[in-house]
Length: 439
Image 1 (tube, rainbow, N blue to C red):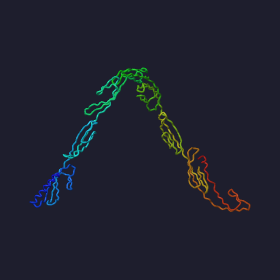
Image 2: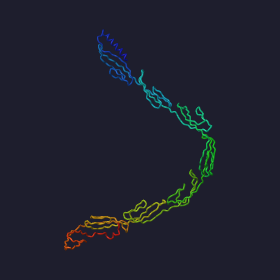
Image 3: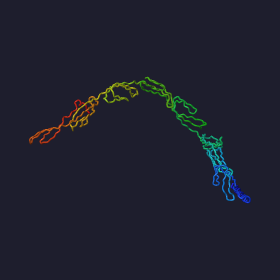
Image 4: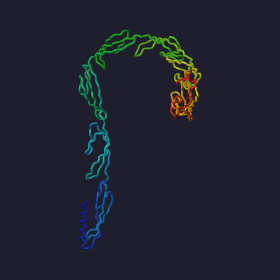
């Protein structure tokens, strides 16, 4: 394209030179150029960028004698080429696309760089890897036998791999493990009820007596010659006698029998894996309900507990309990409640005095409560004390004695003047009826 531009420019200058002899001035020169770019590329020309197909022009002033030059740009943008490709490989194979290798199932996008005749191209590759089927096979042979696996025969223990072709075109690999068996001896132990049939291979015997039995088996597809030694234990049937009691209204299960009455019952259980036929003789008896009358006494405020129930009020009650045998028992309860004694006391002390009330020593006025135990009823009694504190009265006594004499006062003898004494009335005591109440 640059060559076309230079050639056009050259002829334009030549024409300008020739025109000097005929035309004084040429005002405008038109130059055509043709350019091609790929999608996503940019054409940079005269300080401008062009990215789309189209016809563009650029005008600029030139030196005399040419006044104006017009450049017409014809731009064509080529599209990128996109395509999809689907391929299948066997496991372990590789696919080369361009300069890249692929060996795993997946979808890949491959970009080819542009060259002279085209722009970039993108190929979407969908690749699927077919598996190679692998399996293990164990073969058991008797000594002297031979087996053909692929091109080789085996008559000895071995581990070999054989590759086969499958329908999908990929290989299938089989790993063979060949074991050789010799004639062997097998020891078995069995327990059977007397008269039962015991199967050993294709042979059946009747279990009559315990002992050891030997059988020789010919080779089959699963084994070589073998000798089986059977140790057989024969069990006898047995008889069991049982005595049991049940509560009235309950039932006892004996095999399929449901029993609810006293009596002697007999049932034979069929044999199973743990035992042979057995006969059970059951002596069943009914346990009657028990009924008991009680008349306990409690103190007022106490609670009587019988089984899960609690009682605190006087009255007649009926309580149902379970005995050690699991049967119901009825208790007819006639509960009596003894009342607590209540006493009111009044007492007085002098200021500074003390009053003993139960285990307490009182010095202040007030109402006090104490709970005592009665020796007669065994229940508690409540004593209410109204304690008063009496004030002290002042009184002056004038008395004269002779020198050397004395004066008795308040239990003392005085021989000198100036004494003060505090006298108090006798305290109040608990009435005699409380002597029967102890703390």
